[in-house]
Image (cartoon, rainbow, N blue to C red; front, side):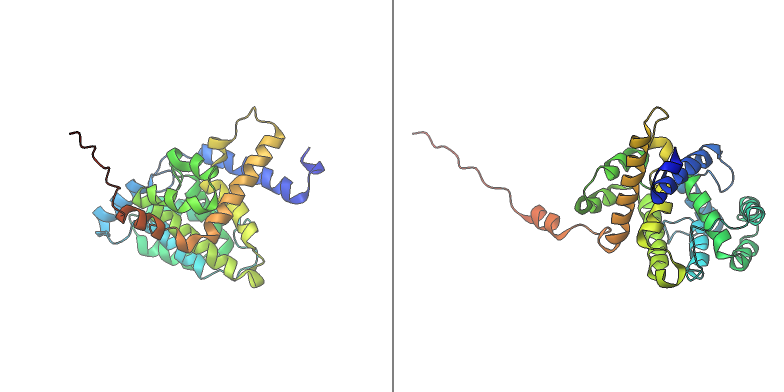
Length: 254
């Protein structure tokens, strides 16, 4: 049935099926499948890192990827399966034992292998960056209201979302070299922000699944495009909060 669809539609459906299957397979370990707040707590206990609300392992992967933004097909090209598995196992076993050696391995890894590990870590989170409580509101929200929803996110979710958007925007900025447009990147990142397992039912028709995948991609593009405006309270809201409520006249009876 997918063969009868336009190529971009078939890719969208296929990616959502694959990421849904991957997300369900993860169980909690030392790093993968662990909640953001737990990872942050470990960072604070082991290294007294209280200056960032983004877990250290996510920051390290993002930093390593920022140095590979010129790689053609970054995020899209799958990488080497065996090297990806080895890198995931190294992070899982050694991140809290020998962080410096893992960081060195990340610097040596190819961009495509790093991207696969980064996506896997995001999709293994028990709570998506947009949270289960707010994700559907994001999914149904018009672009200019996204700012207010972002401000409602817990600090660790909001900071992690900001790190993700900062990274993908740097990748898109190099699109002339890496051939990754805003739409291409959004299509790949969307399943991490809008897990198909939480949005798509097995009983949904192909048209419904396609519409869900397409809208997830659309909202992800909007988040990327409006990234610079998402993190502060809109001036209109500040002005509204400063207005004095109207004073009601009292009726004086004689």
